[in-house]
Amino acid sequence: MGEIYLSCYAAPWGNDGTIQAITDVAECGYDGLEFPSEVVRRFEDRLHVFEEILDTTGLKLSGLLQRINLLDKDKADEQVEKAANSARFAGSTGRGNLIICHSEPVSAPITDDDWLTVGAIVEEIGCRCQDFGINLCFMPRARYFGDTDKDLKRLLAMTSSEVVYLAIDTAELTLAGMDPSKVVKAHKDRLKTVRFQDVSGAKRRAETTSSKPGSAPQFGRGAVNFEAISKTLIDIKYDGWITVDITGEAAPPPEAALAGYRFVMRRSGIFPY
Image (tube, rainbow, N blue to C red; front, side, top):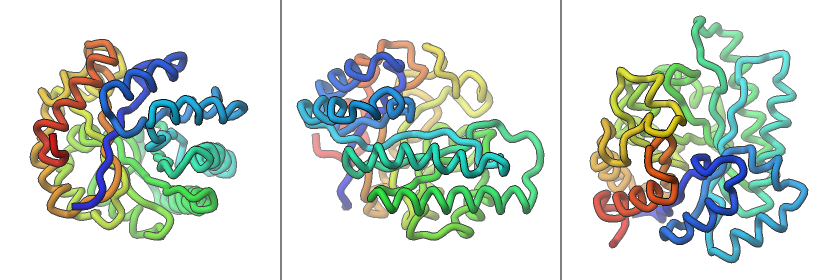
């Protein structure tokens, strides 16, 4: 079994709730926190404050989630620099991953030229992340770029295994009709982050991917088979972060985070309880 650490996604606390999120998550017992990239804008000029707050709780920065337009060739350099700034922030606070996903739903067919654009942007961001001592992880999303087995394999094949890694979201893969356990097995050597998020069912895409309170079921009561995914992670000797994402749950974030923590600790078989 590899070294697995448990973090919580901070977005449900809102942009003004960073400090409260850190306090609440630490009290639950998590090892770290993953933040939306907006935290960079709020704290890049007072990084020491952010680091001190984390240090007082013992939490680590597990990662930053950055949404960028991978298909916008005209703004490719801008996208790379935007991600590189987040990578610089993450690298300054430890060795958390930079997780990127495409920011716009994809409705038109993706051309070979589009693929060249995506590959170049992702590879360049991966190289910049290496400069700051962190890993870049691409995360597929339902209805967005890279949400089929074929597309995911193509992206990973056209990027270097030494600079571009994979993050998976159990909810997004389920919504896309992909089996999270099979994706874990197929890409175990590139996998660095696993996001545990639940959904009501694959047919309710708009509602289940929403951040609106009540749009997602209580963690562990939806369509995602966490037990099977956890077993697969144990089988492959996964080494990395598992991030509990409670976005969209009806319960207040502190309550939902604690329930998610208890579910993973007691029922996944990954952590001794």
